[in-house]
Length: 482
Image 1 (cartoon, rainbow, N blue to C red):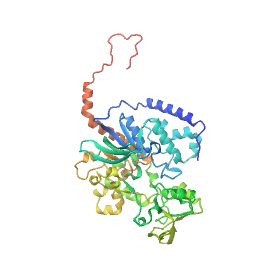
Image 2 (image 1 turned 30 degrees about the vertical axis):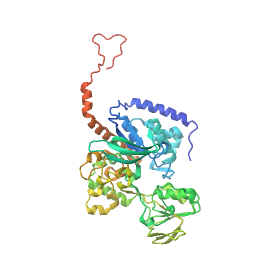
Image 3 (image 1 turned 180 degrees about the vertical axis):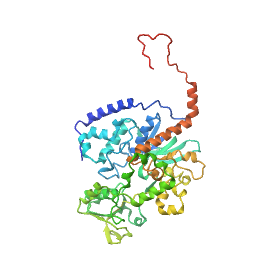
């Protein structure tokens, strides 16, 4: 693991002074023009990982200071980077664009070079995961973003079409409620559904089955035989983690005959698509995502090498699981190529979209449109899983099926994986944040301005603060602007 420079603290202090200077020069952070009204906060952001923090920063740079940022994790452990993200490096190349909001000193590269040095930056291809978590915590602190941690949203309920959203919370001190004009769910890959565990694993003892997103006690897997269903990057990362903790053997099973060799995500990382994906028609968005699911993407090279470094690792292709049964001693897995016996299995099977599985959305889920509502039966049959994704408007907002209450639903914004089909890669994924956070921050600013337009106009018409103009010759000592 790379170690910080001996003078990293001093170098960061210099960087923070540079950030303050750049912030002043870039003329952001104009006067705060929208705030709490009758107990209603303009924006509540649920999730303080990379997406939530970047959006909060962007809103404040637009003069929207009255933000509430919440997270179920403690404030210093938000995001997946210290939990189920078990990779050694990010999957995104180090030089991807990052939304700096006019202050490049708070970019990932600036922080990394301050902590580890310019030479270290040249030596890496991908950002180390531990370093990324460190950067995000520093970013939160240096940007002055306060996070209410260890607090879960139990329900979001519209009061009426034009009234505030009621946000019910459960935290260390008990249950409480916030009122919000807009709620942004920056809740990552599970934000529009939950973990997918195939039905064939449902009859196995619960303590013998894990999902890659679970909090797995890998030390307890020492000496165990482990089968992994699925072969994405997470499968290899979990396999390697188990082997690093003393697992006897790990088999990764892939349904496909070979690992994909093309990563469509690398093609997507250009401004034209990031900024303009929303210009696709619904039919084009659907075709885009059906193809993406069909071709998938390969596991990252580093994850594959990490697992293959162990003699106890095997990678099995053309190996879907037909049955998985418990014989009172071990798990017996049947594949097209024979029987495999394991002590524990791990499902590297991703997530499913299902708004009703999210407690915070259960109240509104029945009225929220999903993609199957706008597709033909033939299109839905191409990929029923994708058809369950929420259908969002151009502001990442939910859309009402029936029209009634639609205004309120549109103020619940899914800045998470649920935006995949409607908005592309603009939500929780690092490459898309530069486009997504900019787009959503602008949309929230515009809608809050529209709500307050009459009050702002009245304030303007009543404005009568003299600027101090003096008639006559200019005094020698006077300093006059303009």
